[in-house]
Amino acid sequence: MPDIDIDFADRNLILQKIEHRIAKLPNGKKHNTGIYITEIPHNPVNNISTINYKDADNRKYFKLDILNVSLYKDIKDENHLEQLMKKEPLWELLEYKEFVDKLFHLQGHYDICSVIKPKSVEELAIVLALIRPAKKDLIVESKDIILNKIWQKPTNGEYYFKKAHAVSYAMAIVVQMNLICETLKNT
Image (cartoon, rainbow, N blue to C red):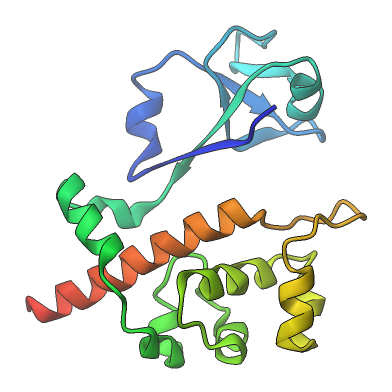
């Protein structure tokens, strides 16, 4: 089944408007972001699926991950978003810990950012992938080895970022970087 993530400035506003069931983790707890918008066996009291999301996936139930990405609250409209996406960010800002610590998904990971020194969306995606447990050990490797192994699916089941997710989040960070600079320029 496809893995579909949809980002919203406030996921709760969307969840209030659509009928849905909450996905369940294999350990029996509520999934933080996963929902079903089609019927699935569920507990009518708490609205949580009675089938964990991995088993539900095997049974062809279609899960969506509805994510909060608060940086979108400052986007005025679609044109504004497109402008922020198209504008080349000031990559040099990633050399400053104070700036990196303000960024979505990069907060607390200045060490990895300072080693890779990203100057493109793809390099920023590599930083995001290196943060994940399955790829952390690559940080000490040469750039060639990192590029060769970063998008390979781990064989031990550890959590990692697929390239499509990492690039998407890297673009969100570019938008956030440009938003920060735009806000500073206008103050």
